[in-house]
Length: 235
Image (cartoon, rainbow, N blue to C red; front, side, top):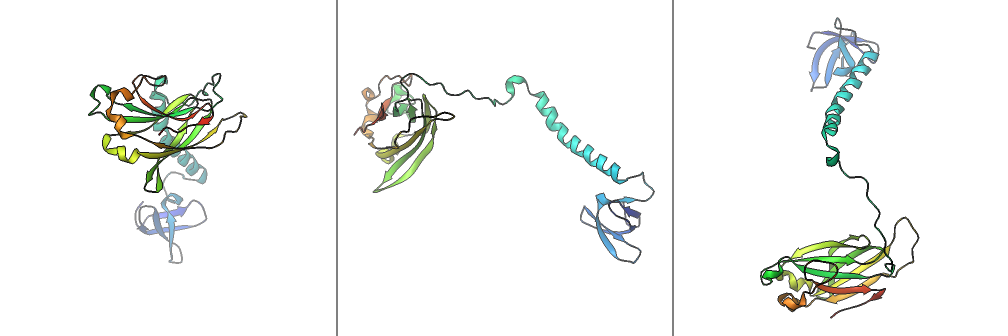
């Protein structure tokens, strides 16, 4: 399509001569009264070319949409079954005695054989049949700020953060708040958990403070938050 071509409109009666263009999508059509009518290029056809009636235009647009979607479909077909994203998620299993809340804050050295140089990982251990929505706060003077927040599934543990000894001062006074609940079933209501803890930085320099436990393969420093529905504080 170029200036001077005679065109007709597809979506309405009329047509005229192409007098110019506005951008890539708009053509100016001079009608019989000498006025320039702006139209979308897809809504006009040059007189003398193949028949572009409305039905044909719809078919062309549908074909274009199909072609645009085709690469995505081909890409999905190329995926092996093992490479497809997992959409099914098994429900956490409950265990006998797990309806009493027990949760722990754990500190695990990344290399216990080099205790003076190693960094540490912290975890929240949920040893119960409840989901735990938690917030970890650290004190700054008399005020607190949020250090981490998240959810821990029943009878699992959740990674919180990695830190070094230079960060121990910010962990000296912390507070853990938790809400317990179950999904897709009725459950006994548990009171909110609000436990302040004082983390002794000196313990991170002593090998014997990291002990064998049921939650990690590595020796760990474990602080009790709540055990058998009883909130506890270790100072």
